[in-house]
Image 1 (cartoon, rainbow, N blue to C red):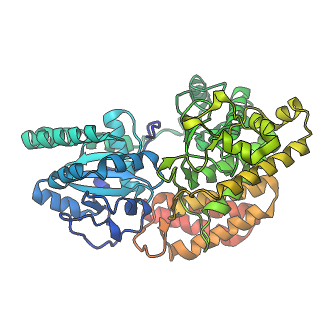
Image 2: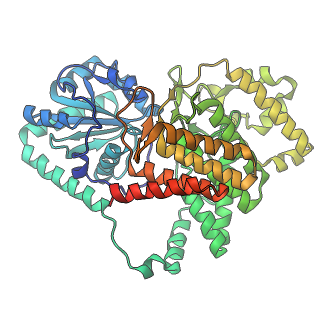
Image 3: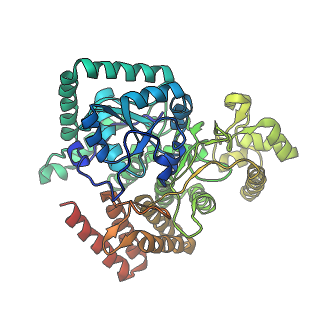
Length: 536
């Protein structure tokens, strides 16, 4: 399950319970699983569960109040590995489902479709437990205030938690209500952004002190922040690149370079097909959780493009090219726009599509296997579970070519041949599931990434793709000032959020910067006006 640092969110529990359900018709909140009518791939995954799941709808809380039942809110996303595990172990179990159906009203939420719901309850769980992740499982009172929260649970623990919370609710409802009030108050306090004076906002000493404190938590050998898991955190890298450029801080500059190198060498980057996975389960960026998210790759396209401009490292250009190749090949919808995610699992097994047995690699590589295995870390000390390997580079191309007496062009040619052979073999495998929602904010991030890549490399392919994607979003998700959060044929419920307006405004302005087309500037201004009107 995903663990990550504490976040600050901009919505409160009270506002959440007043949000409309986007015109969705009210469903019966008592009998049956009603997710079959939903378009979200994540909700569809749970449509056949014996649990009587409902999609998010404020009317459910009114019915829970009348029935005196607790509400269970379970949040995840379609490409989440541990969400699949908990579904298979727990939510598909008839005994668990019977207990849930008897004692709770159960709601399933796609966190990508309803980030507002996810943010509020993620804040609650972080306040209660100190960490968070997905699947996110929260038990709330009929008024929506949370009384219990956690992430992945085994079947036994889940049943124990449900039973204990239900018993306490029956014996001491006032005590739980008091606790829920304290949690709700904590959510509100977290969401308050304190005002600061102009001087403190612009105080370079304060920024320097913050960076110095941060440096103590850096992993100087492998890059990123120290810890047993590694997240790529593009915003952190973008800040440090800007900070090191403006201040001349060499330590920050070197740390970003180390991080970009190690990520590009690691198994967290799909060395065969391009694109980055979600996060690494180890400190070396070796073994990832294998879901691929659009927003990660969109931001990392920006980061490696900016990294190329800062460090003049040609390998960063190659990473950017492979990200784009992956996105167009695997995540672009036929009508335009880019899907949100690829699943971590295929055939019920995490990483099966991406990992390799040494015997299969020997068969494909033939006489070049020894050199291939040296380049991609197919050696006993790098073996993963079930005697399989995740391709992983341990050095730069320059160093590998020199140590193996290869010219740069010769190594480049070999890599292309190796990748083509393995891509052909991989095409015979079962492809991971696709979450085919086209999310406005994430596609806007990609527009910025494509524009940054054009700015760095001067390749019109990036700019053409950015302009085409922007035109798609305007055509399918934007109408008379109203912006959809996600587009999918048949789904008419998706209202936009602040992130959609803000990111698309940024994308429009970025396109204006590189094209000087005033249409983009006008669009950016209109979107900013909508932000001021909708979120005063």
